[in-house]
Image (cartoon, rainbow, N blue to C red):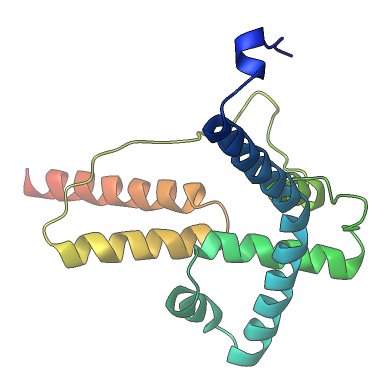
Length: 173
């Protein structure tokens, strides 16, 4: 912790007001961290109800059309609520967790080797012919990601594409 010097301790009124505002904002931030999980569980419960009402195949489009957050976040809220309903997540025990920590608590362990870590960010420029093509690509990728890890599906699609290109090249030669 920093030791204040004498000139910093006797601050003029504008700086005292700023200090009060900073401390109030910090207190609100600290409180929000502790109430975020409860809000996420309520959102998850509501999303579960929506999924039951809209029927098979309509949930993801409904979320995309009506919610102001990603499909992946909707899945996270739903997962937390389902875990709380099943007793795998005791909200009182994990109230000090962040949302991601609570989600990690309820996720099933993967069978990946511990030294194989998923890539956090992959940057690949993808040229699109039209704005509509660009929009459709990202919409499909979001939908795929909402269903889980899109990596294996994308790798298989690229393999099929490369095989088709190789076949076309061999046929034209």
